[in-house]
Image: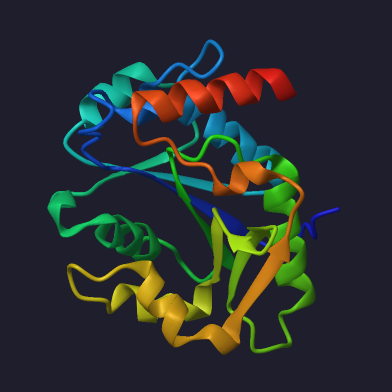
Length: 207
């Protein structure tokens, strides 16, 4: 069971331009509702107590198309600076009542609540250690979402435009803890219509 005393924020990244998809990924149908709503519910069920959604130029469309009750929506005024700019925006809005944050691209819909709980529980058990970044792995491959200790957000915030979160991870490997999962969905993201159809088919088959 996830430790109740750990305050975890989910930062859902929905500010991309979705060029290859042709429409906002956040609003793709995921078994009868927008993908964003599905991701938010998984985050809640996994133990995230604060929910942030970062939007870009499609922000108004996303607000109209999804139920965002109880969610803080932040608008990235310059998403052309890359995904790191959305991560930075979300992290900058966290206060120190938050212990950690989960960075979650909206196009990763096959993550399960148990994957999130495992990250939070492992974080809770590792707070006395040097581990500050927690990543799910399936068969040795790292996936999403990534959990970051709130006290370790500054290296992400300080990254210049054009850099990625991977830069921080690679420079701080001794502070990265891998959390194995049997769920291959942590490796799945949806960038094209073909990937979307494939992921949805897999999801329905496993539900």
